[in-house]
Length: 84
Length: 242
Image (cartoon, rainbow over all chains, first blue to last red; front, side):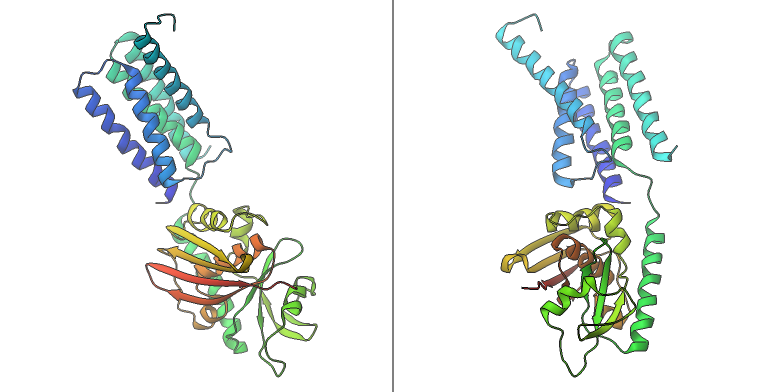
């Protein structure tokens, strides 16, 4: 098993941790799940540093956009803004 | 289509379907998030995992290459440290000098070697020796190592990510980049070929020598090597014309 396969396996295993924990906690906000997956992804990439096939990390970019969106939603809800 | 591409696409599609059904139809966030995780894993498989060359096949090919060079060195009785050099067309060659009455080759002579006629037996500017293709020359080309790149990054990309012949690499440069001290963690390939080990280093070090020669753009020689199944400690010295 090479380093890239190890990365996918470790990520798959780690993704199940927030899924299990938040499911048991009856979380109903998908933003929390997505944020956890995003943080795990970037943390693991930093630690394991796998080489991507593409020059641009498309997946990282998509996850980051979703993360920013959900954080913005939460900030807006705290500030009482409702149009997001 | 590659097997991994198929598996990745399967995960991605299934993830989207589960996620969509969970979110819009069942209105169940955990199911939707499970589908999302599946989709992310599918995308990862698509983006990261290439069709692997069986590791044992790669090692077997390298071992054969090492044995071929070993036979030549044994017949020639050569055990001198080789100079890894990047030739003008980007290929890497290893020059194993003969120790004759002239003693060690001088730096300008070695630096000029990349312009010497590319023959197996070299007799150029008073330097005599054998010019062989080191095992690893092609790997360096395939890993797209370029002159002037960061040495540690190039070594990691070649040894760990591309060929998976080691688990980690640390490199520090001294003396203005002329000396490189490298530590390679958990080398996956050893060698019981004494002539090869003395001249070109163990196979993983030989590959590191090829990478260093390309990155530095000057002949590099292994001046010290300590091999242990857990790590290799390697000192490479560059030979510039000035």
